[in-house]
Length: 266
Image 1 (tube, rainbow, N blue to C red):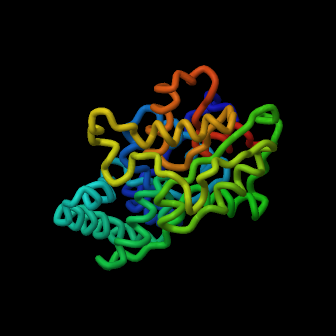
Image 2 (image 1 turned 45 degrees about the vertical axis):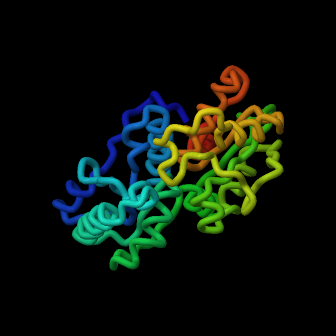
Image 3 (image 1 turned 90 degrees about the vertical axis):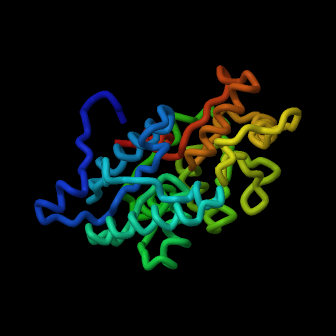
């Protein structure tokens, strides 16, 4: 897929709702997907896939706030509930039924925590969506683009251990990658990237070996050319780890959505 050929117009929920339209999916972009320069590329990649598939979706645009995940993990329960209730009211106002997101933290919060506040939605992580589209034959991927590459996948905590989703990301990767390897600690035993629970925004204690360094070392020890991730925090932490280990010229970190756009057989 050539990312430079055409400008994609992203549908905004408020605009469609004024026209009497109710999209099938709300695509929750998330803070990283909207503001982090590296993760914006993942957002663009996934939107290209949604456009290619002619998915009926929209984003909230400037109406989107934080899911509340970080503040709850950091201990500010009152702010979490304020954010959650505001989001629930907004989404119910647009009659949202299904939410798509690339962020496992938002996925976990919407799926497992919003129902207690009367916010029940059908929540789908982008790797689950991609697997479903592959199984239905709507996506055709080639193994040519990465035929000479070795890839290792890092399990995001809030997709893997917290929600038991280990299969979908690997199934998608195996449609594109011939040589996929595993780290010794994987699936339910995977080591955290070190960014969850608000840790990404905290300073490490002096002298301590940070978790993201240890996880990056595990990934590099496999000899992989590509570290695949499916979470904005994981991408930030492992990209920093690759730079810290001075492997930026040799090893790349891609989100699964980016790998799909590069492998898409038109």
